[in-house]
Length: 175
Image (cartoon, rainbow, N blue to C red):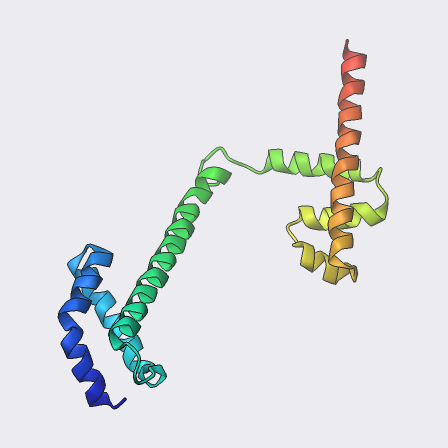
């Protein structure tokens, strides 16, 4: 399809495409943006249009896909933005009385309990606790991913038993 043929077909469908764009976006400015993005994509990929097929359906499909893709991007951006706004509140880092003392005590407590575990469980768990991903730990320790996940899970189970046993012991001696 030549450039002129493409422009002629678009000109015939201009009102329909504008109506569809407005129907999808419910906003005149967004409809204009959608129309422009659609025409740009259609013009870029006009060579992929097969002669003898329905041009109107082809361009409407491009418009719908463009709209859906933009909508999905907007949702992801909104989630990331909202999450980023919540991060300081969750961690409390903007509060003047916040410090990491409690987290450090928890970390030291877990590290103390890890001494009772075998190194094959303690090392992957400590790396995981420090923020490394399973894949990074597997690469670092030259272990299969499933083995790393299993060892971290086993470390959690054993630590839970150690901590529960210690808590029960404290209750018995205090009572």
